[in-house]
Image (cartoon, rainbow, N blue to C red; front, side):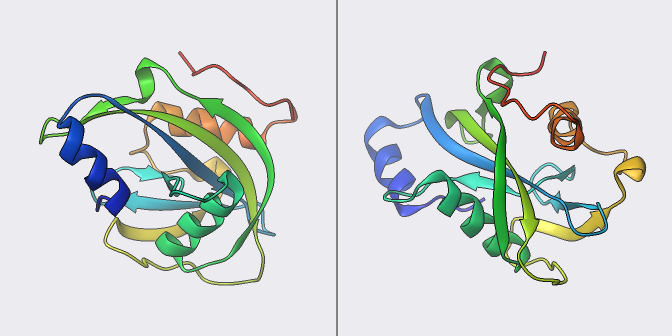
Length: 162
């Protein structure tokens, strides 16, 4: 994933040290109750679209921008289903950069009937899936996020899944 100018500026000052970053994840559900997933270039796993907050942006603007950048479609955020952080969301990249993500997970719907496409260099494929036929190569936390978004419990979850 390309680093934003903002993160490059911080990395120039702190090197590889742990950096806490706010981000978003979008569980996009269309009118056919299908879920939009991207095949990530970095992990080769299917996942909901996600990304980092830019300076001056609020979280709703961020989820709209990230989905548009990655999929080419516009979404409407409907609810926040989880706010996740902790050890499961701490990553060390091959270059040694460490990040701790605080992710706000939104349930979204497309604003128009549109076909998603690979719209940047972060994805290998983009498509909708029936929730009962999700791909095998998904991280457990992404399966948990999707189950939470599809469930009847509309309370926001504030702890990471174990």
